[in-house]
Image (cartoon, rainbow, N blue to C red; front, side, top):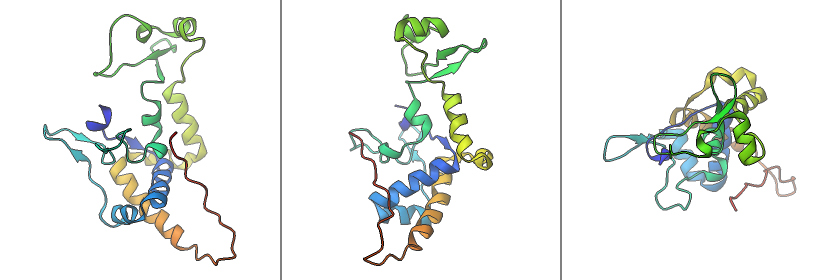
Length: 175
């Protein structure tokens, strides 16, 4: 339900990855996004959601294989509590009943055998790939429009000849 009423903020690196993925699976869509941008999805109740949400997809995500970190980590990661121990952060649609979702630190280790990854730690690792972009976090529609133009420009520079090696990486597919 997050995707229906949530538009993630993403780093330029994530936007470039998504733009590259889209250019590989739907070049026309990538060009439309670069030329016209993409708007957040507006529901009948007025809430805005991710513009890449797809009703017809089993994952409801048009970029499932290239989705941003926040989407990948949702419901499987922890946050740090006031004392620094990891704890689950349950969204407004989640279950608040007794159980593992209320555990912190050592309690999580006892139930799961290890602490879940902390989303802020994973975000820091992502920023470490390109530290200069850390202040460039933007809403997905804005970041993707900017990245799509750049990615398509770079792809267009590749005037390959038939005997040149194929330098395009394989596109991952969800299994």
